[in-house]
Image (cartoon, rainbow, N blue to C red):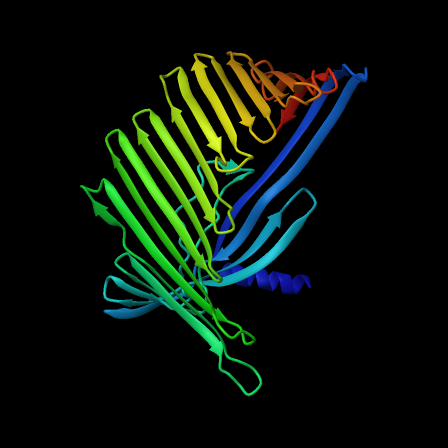
Length: 407
């Protein structure tokens, strides 16, 4: 077995290997002393952790070939052995290879791709995140059927089709896929740009009498000159059985003021409209904003906030009102960055404004952190008070002092 591995390793080296690595080891050791104001527990705690994450890739020079003349073909591929390390004790080996491009060139501007049908256009997304991602509900598919794609000087398109003919026992089945995207149009001395695309797909199963026919329309216009900027993007899906969906994102800005609008429509009354207006007042008041979410529904929310910076101090305040629950969520923070240490105070509070509510103040949760990386070289000292809630349970939380050394 060792001899076989040695031969394989030498063969890889002889092929001309590219080594790429992004392997990172991290570790820390922490000593802390804390006192829980509620349970009265106290004492030292020792903690340590080590992990190795990333990957090492042994990849050959990209193989391929290119023709010459006015009509020529090219093909490129990749092949790699990758070692994925997820922690200090686990590693996964993966050998992969793929054709990355297969094109026929006609002159200098026309390229015909024979690898797939291409496509997939998406211009509109929300200006805010839900969880860790923006809302992106309408997007045209790519590679809807085996086929080819074409690019002529920025004009793009593609076509694909496959199926099975009707027999004595089964009906015909097929999938037909096509898309087209115009080259970006520049107007008004390049201050205005326009993009547009269309995608269509028809698919019929053997048991169906009719095919399902879907279409997607995508468009975007953007303008920017001097202090004025703006964009309007729309993705529209005309799906089978009269299912219509549309996603629109608009943004306008002038000098220090910005307006964002996001709208999503679905035929089953899934309408979502959100908008945010923000302004930078000066170098100290960095942002003042008002944000309305889901404005067309009973569970709409309205938020207002301000962020500021004064020399070594950063601070902010925001408030959100949920109309359906008659509830208010408040958040505030103050960060003081000194030469030797940082102090951060965060405060989260919740109010129940329902007349029948048992109590108005439902949460009052402060967190105070004092930390320094300047006192001990290569170590972080911290004093943290968290876990308190003066509204729900009248819990006092815990105070923890720690020193942490990490690599």
